[in-house]
Image 1 (cartoon, rainbow, N blue to C red):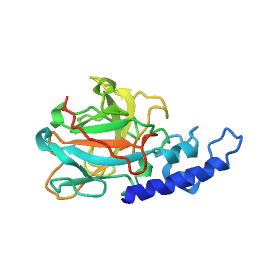
Image 2: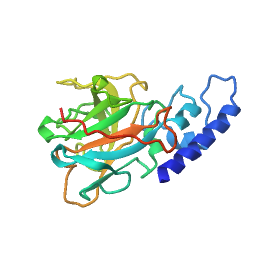
Image 3: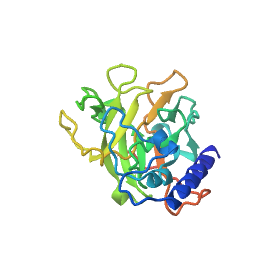
Length: 245
């Protein structure tokens, strides 16, 4: 209900801005877009209008499979709420403010899944500040699963993190920044991307809750679903756990 109300506020604000459009090609700004956009240490330039930014974003974040890939039915909301085992939860860099995950205004309508795997088969990944590859792997893979549940457009993508706790690699509480470059191995020692077109979602944080785990259980799948043009504010969606790959 809280996220429904947030979307309603954003929708109303965006509609008010549409009625006052100017002929300028420069992005319009508002208090809400100031709250969303940021460079997070890189260039702050963007060509995305604030109307588009306010009408798009993360609609829900749900645990759709738990340990061993067992489906969670119904899917469990994990935004600032412990997961099904009470071990972890998801937030943005400002707790439950999901608008901030649309941090470059480019989130669009694709969905993403985080699939947790043994660390030795997880993803190679990069340091956000230096663009250099970390020597270890993180215990998850990120998939862009497209705007619907058709698996034909699913693709594994690359990521960088901000090592907020200085632990020397990803751990609970570090900010995650996927970027829309196809994943392959071995990745080059320096991240290769187009700024800022490749950055659609970011400021994602998996946070410890119980103190009993270092990361979500192997087989866990977390779905980040975005707002779609045909979604009413109360639209429903069916969730299907995707087998690990």
